[in-house]
Length: 305
Image (cartoon, rainbow, N blue to C red; front, side):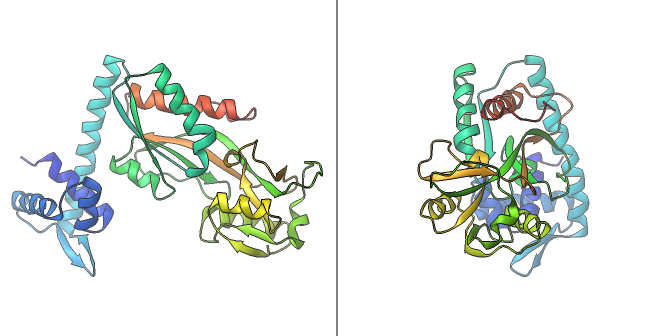
């Protein structure tokens, strides 16, 4: 009989691209992972992996086995969720992956509320903007607080359920100069020195697309994805920034914010979980806390999914 732990190791190696990377994510030694994969190869009697430059790739047999492994692992999670649903109680642990720009105004209030409502639940929070949904599909996190800019198609990995939280507009951020916070036309920024994220990022692409629609190419004087750096440059009067509203502390001194009136740039913040027929009370509690925090943070929000 095949060992489900070995099937999960095969899935992890296929996703990470190497035994070393898989071992790091599994918190095992590369030797231990290699040993388990060798045992799996012995069980099935055929090679499952082949060298591919500095990485490894699945053989045809490996691809076939992984397809079945995905269904087996999904069935195991369905069983666990079904039992949890019958119990009806929130569990003891959960792992949340969240964007840095959502921590102060959504994640922190949500975790505080969870601590009060479910004191037995210990939530580990991974603050990262890298490959969150892949980690969700691999099972290394239970809930993802992610984003999708509206210029991108709605896509999610197979087996992932997305629950919208709110539309988060980018605001024009400049140094505080005593002027009002009237809405700004994006085309007004054609003569500004801007600080923008790299064009390879979703936010950078969204800004570039909106500026083109407004009839100009932005003058990117500074390029950084670090929102704290963007706000510092705006506060110093060196550049104008375009920053998601949720990422800005309303009490931040020295800056002025204004909405964009003609070509709004929006990102959708969402909570994502692995799809199961039976709802796990633990992930449900985490998502509910995130949704409640998002509602409190904004008076205009999307209805619950």
